[in-house]
Amino acid sequence: MLAKNGRLRLSSASQFMHRPILTIAVALVLITCLGSGSRLAAAPLHADQMLKLPDGREVKVLSVSKFEYEKGVMALMVRYETHLSIDQRKELSDEVDQVWRLAQKEVEHLGYSEAILSSNEVPKGIFLTASRTMNFIYEKGADGQWTRLNRADFMASQ
Image (cartoon, one colour):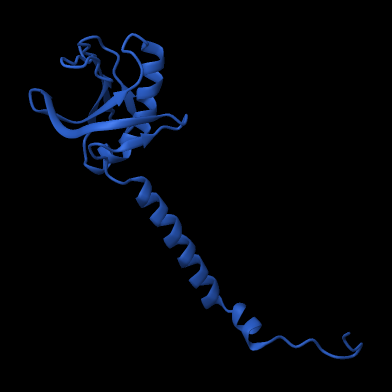
């Protein structure tokens, strides 16, 4: 029990904690931790990588490459394997937008203003395999905003 007239004395460690240096040190540690988390999220995409989509499903990256598709227009092409059928247009559209959210960091990091996301069905067959593909093109506008092009000549279905 404390004496009624006694003064409460702080330890030397408690006095140190009120100094501005400690506040700055703690702030720097927090900034470093938060900064490293954003760098991890922007890890480069690579072949055979499994991507966990925001809705919980996973897709497999087949390849990531530079692609020239129109008289010197360079884009980053990300091919991935989908468990959806190319005929499931609405579901495929939703899925490719989720893949785009993950690939966008890589595209911007590499300095591209165009990207092609290629959704590839899981190959069917035993000896002779077949797979259909649907390509989606994303373009960065002058305002810095990305949009998916819906023009028929840019969406190629094989």
